[in-house]
Image (cartoon, rainbow, N blue to C red; front, side, top):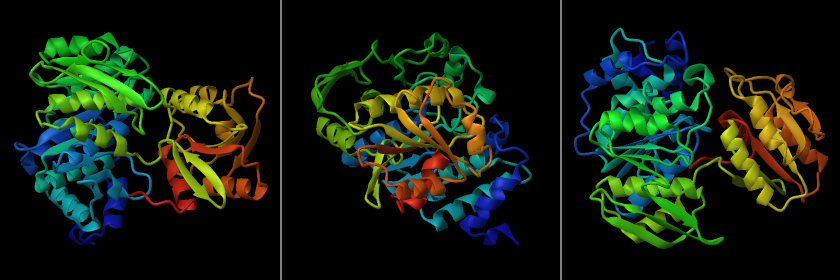
Length: 426
């Protein structure tokens, strides 16, 4: 069948099998196709966001702030929870199937005999769509690392690093200094950069100095303070070096650390936003699958995509603050994640484990996952063939409502839960 006649589903299926490996870091092939596409971003402010955790919430807050200020926005994030369209948003709305089909066709024509991975093809398609729309600002999430990620073919006007932790060890290594340097690869000479990591590797600042890039680092160039359960403050400088302070901000739904990073990025972007737009955007920003509560058959489920040690520790801290008579955890993870450390972090709050098999590439069975259970943990353990089976079991078990049911471990795990709980991503 001629690819020009493909539906979106057919494009995605073809993309999954087109390249010999799923992850093929390096910009040579992507850069060639990007050059052939000849996309125009001269009038678009490009903000690129890298980091181990916090990318999604930072992108969401930036998008919400700019839309509150009246700007046209475009966002590119990955992965998706239910449908591919979630990856590209224009002014907060999902792109249509037809828009994606047109973008994939354009990229395919530019490829010629160059083979691209699923992610590379999707990234260039997103950039094609964004260039076609000509928004005021494009907010782009790095998929893996930074320096060699496909999104890095486009120069950032503002580069952002959210947090740094050990993840994707097979590709980035297990050294924070090396990982920090890889993520700083999105910096550009003469352009501002922001780092929101509270304990940053020295390699980030070192690379910024070598490159000639002005780096704004949290607790050095800007700072924030939580004043009460509902209020916080921020102080730093704008692009011209003028001191800016917000003394009484309402706490956002998303992590304050990432909100502080987003404010600094906005002040460096050259797109004026009023304090009111900042506060309103931070308040309304939302990310699916992050401490998200969903009611289903009389029970409340908490969904969180935490899948590495840093995000698992954050989730555990959040759950400790919740009034609950024990946490019932549905957990499914990919085989290339640090399952032992994730489960160790969550063991402090989990009363019973319900491990699930993820029937996806790199997924592992519930039985394989059980091998990583902390030896000191005395919580009960059950294995299930799927997320659906685990949820059905817990509904029928009629566990006390005082216990909270949490679904975590992967985007795939939460995505499967969305389908069972009949939750739609909007």
